[in-house]
Image 1 (cartoon, rainbow, N blue to C red):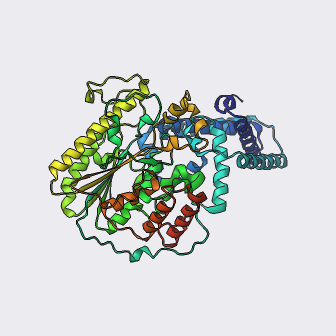
Image 2: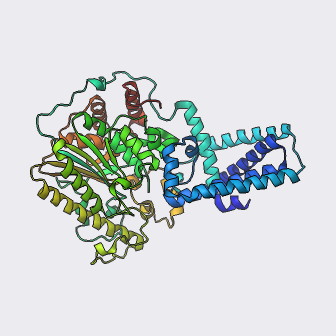
Image 3: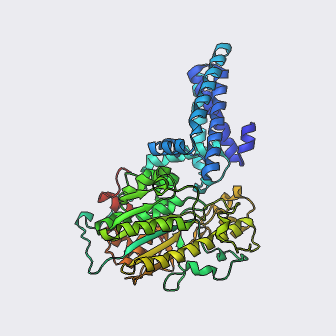
Length: 533
């Protein structure tokens, strides 16, 4: 009861917590009969679930859900043990204490409940849990709120198994007409020298002047302008943290929302299954493809996902020699070195993450880089956020200048985007006081919370075609903008998606009730670019 009162915040959550507690007790009673053994095992499981979920939230701003148990992969286990090596010893200690405690309880407790009564309780509590979970489904954004650990885990379990039984991991139309030509027949031809392409991931960045009353330094909005002077809006699919959502969008040209309850594990699911990708098409057009990733490649199976999508050379923090969060100039220096080394081997595609603007914003990151900075009176977190954006803008301008000076005979197309707003973005719009209330304004997807930016720049190159670079665009369309701007021909699946872009005026999953997205998923399954989902 104490655990429930401390962690659950709604009547539905409390009801589910009690159902889980009842279910666990009845399960153990059916197996072991002993009441104290059942009580101890149930209590320990609840404690373990809450502690693990809180641990995950403290480190990643995501709580544990059932999909974490449903999809267990070697990369994720390796990531956890490499990042938090003490987990192994805590696990062994917990197992030893459990064994001793259960042994003592087994020998001292002689109170037994009949198996028939236990199975009846197990069946009833399970049926009621399923009914409540399906009647009151969770919102995907609740994964990013640090509360309701037990009820959320149980409800996501029911929802995940329900979705898996109905349609598998991925939404797709049952049947489609007019499938595109097989991608194997696609031949990539061009009548001019192709530019090197750099896709820049601008961490947590958006034009904060969209929020009324925010003070910004002079010239702040210049960073969000493209070479033609336009500021373009990108609508992403994650609120306040999931960079991998937009990573999936821009590398595959597909929607995270098509995965439903499995969306928070999208890159883990897509690894080895989703072969459709921007880098894969560029490979067919003679590009060498590189990814400069600022964290462990095992995080959410990033390496496996990106290589499946066509990244041939994946460099994570160990390959790059990354320490803690680095200023963006660190990654720009690495990109310049790579271009210097590899440019003679053909056109390059570089997917470059930057992380200077990653949370938390309650401490100064590299204050020596902005010695003349003066806070703007917005509050400490917002001022630190804007200071880091200024660092990014300054490093980026220097990067463009160095590209032009170091490689006067080379041409470059640079497309950059904000992957999501900062965690406090929704609170700024609605004046919600604390991070635990983030789910309140995100129950209904509001474009204000999902809008970042994308921008197109070039060095020694004039973009070939900006017809698809609409002023407002959903993130899965960004590969088409990049390919057309670079003058790279589209394969049949991207031609299909470009027609959808213009018919839907930049909307992707939200167009026509999601029917075109489901159709595209089915076409990709039919031509073998999505397998096993």
